[in-house]
Image 1: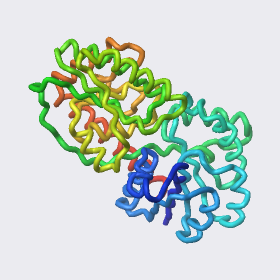
Image 2: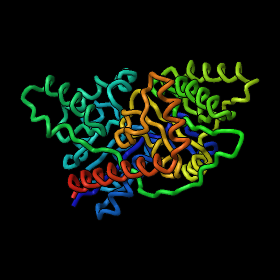
Image 3: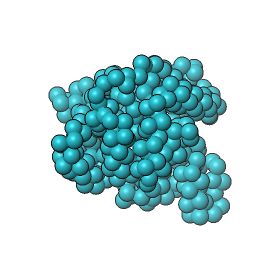
Image 4: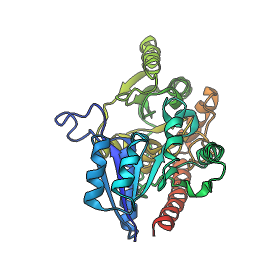
Length: 347
C-alpha cells in the first residue's frame, strides 16, 4: 500500500508572528492540501509537510517513511537527490510541476532543473496539464533517446473539493463588484480585464468596484499593479474604484469571494485556477478563458479582446444561475476524473 508524502517549501518571507495564520495560505499549499485530503478519503495513507529548505527533507521522510514523496513545484536543488537516494533508496520521488510552458519560461532555472532531475533513478516529473506533459516528454525524450518516457513523466492533475454554495444575485444596488483575484503577474491579464469591467459597468449604468488581492507581486507584476492604480486614479470622478484586499486564510477568502457579483479569470496561461474554483464554489458566476481546463466554454472570453470580456460579463450578469450551474458541473467532472487518476496511480 502506498504512503504518500507531500513536501512544500515555506515562503521566503515567513515570519512566525506575521504569518502564524496566513503564512501558508497560498494556492500551492491549498492545492497540495486538497490532494492530501482526497487521498486520505480514498483510503490512501497521505501526509503534507512544509520544509524550511532542502535540509528538512531527510527528516520528514525518515519520520513518515513514505513510499512516494511528491515535491510540490521547483524548489529542491537537483544535486540534493544524490544524497537523498542514498539515504532513502526505496522511495519514489515525484517533482510535480504547476505551470504551463509560457509561465515556466519566466523561471530561469526551470528547464535546466527538469533535465537534471530526469537523470536520477526513482525520480519522476509530475505534470498537472496535458499540453505541458507533451512538451516535457518531448524535451526529455530528446535528452534521453533510449528512455521509456512514460516511466519518467506522469500526469497528476489538480483536485478541488466539491463543496458548493449558492447565492442570491443582487442587481438592485448602485455598484457592481467584480473580483479579479490572484497573484499579480502579466500572464494573469489584470489590466485588460479591468478595462473590460469598466466598459461593462458603464453599459449597465453601475459604479464598478474592481477587487484584487495584490499582496503577491510576481514576475514583473509591479508594472501591472501600477497601471491598474493609474487607471482608477484617473477615473476617480466616474465613481469606479480599485479595491485591494490583503491575503487572508482560506475561510476568510471564501467569505470575500461570496460577497462578489462576478469573478474574472481571463488569463493567458493556466493549469487549473484555484481562485476561479473558489469563486464558483461560493455560487459566484465566473468568466474564464479556454486556458482553465474546467471552465464553461459558453462563458469563456478571449484574453486579448476586452469587448468579448465585457459582453461575457453582461451575459453572466443577466444569467448568473446558468453560469454557476455550468461551471460547477464542469468542475465536478474534472475533479471526479482527477480522483480516478490519483487513486489508480497510488492504490
